[in-house]
Length: 470
Image 1 (cartoon, helix red, strand yellow):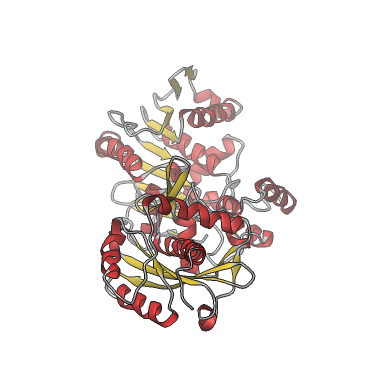
Image 2: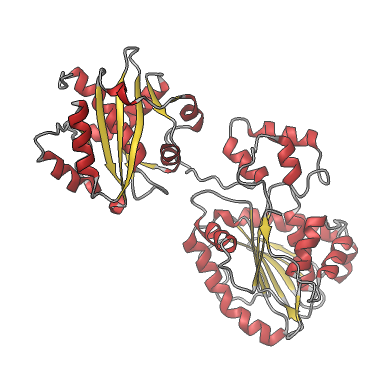
């Protein structure tokens, strides 16, 4: 396990009962499943019920997570009379398919004797038990949970939830948990389960990060399975070593087949079988393969002295950072771009740009609107800085121009982790057939990638217009 809650041997656990129900369902618990059941099922000696009210589980695909959830749900429903268990998935179709698979396992097991006839109507899927308890699937909506009583609530594939939607669901269920505890004597539990998500998984990311930082409630237990941060997800031996179901539900030969199914989707593979968060965004405008194929070595200090050169500058949203980059057109016709500095705030940016412009006798290019406007205004008043004109229409063409240069092999970028992260996490905003980096819709610093793009654009246009003197 990569991290998580350790078993407290001083407390009794309900894990053995969960394991017994798994045997009834013909799905014996794997070691990792039994461990989670033992910890999540620890009993509070003061109440005789569950010690933990929240369970957060992050694990890879193909590990048996659904089996564990179904077994826990069945055990919870049969703890006492008239209990209400809910399974929530990202869509009604997903919840329905999960429920029907559960019914199939239930009907083929000895537990069928304690089940009543299931309801399979449109919009009314539920499995009642002879003790009056009910298991129901639900789709994820902001009003899910409002006005219902819940004893066990599972938010599965929580990576699909935004913070607003996830919080609204929990806000709907939580008021009922206190009353259910008083009514039944059994502590309700909220299970939040998922494979790691993306930069847009704001609900699950925040909760998992809080657990890792030691900021979760003492009544929350958590489990984090996956490869270490510095491990190579393309190494199948590494996946075998850290996947909790490797060698139990499938073997290494099948793992190679799983990998082949992902093809060039390396981030998807790392997330699915390494449980590594994909920090990129869905609308990444420079494909990762193209980005990796167009990297070059950092340029030596003198490279800008005897070749067409321009500097680019960009400011992040709310003026948190300012990035300064350089673009140099070589004798081979290839423009090499490189981030020079990422400054905190904007205070030192003008002085640094003036120094560079004087030293290399090269112009500067930047957008004149948004968070860039104050610095652009200051630079426009400096006699020793030549600003390359950049109209609104020009700015909309900068991104596509840079992307085309990469695709055609005439633009390269020097290796830089700040630039890599910026290229991965920046979204784009469209206007007709043109687009630009959107600062508000991105998940990280936009200024590094924006600064190299305007620098590259400036080199191409100032050289053509014969604006530079060398």
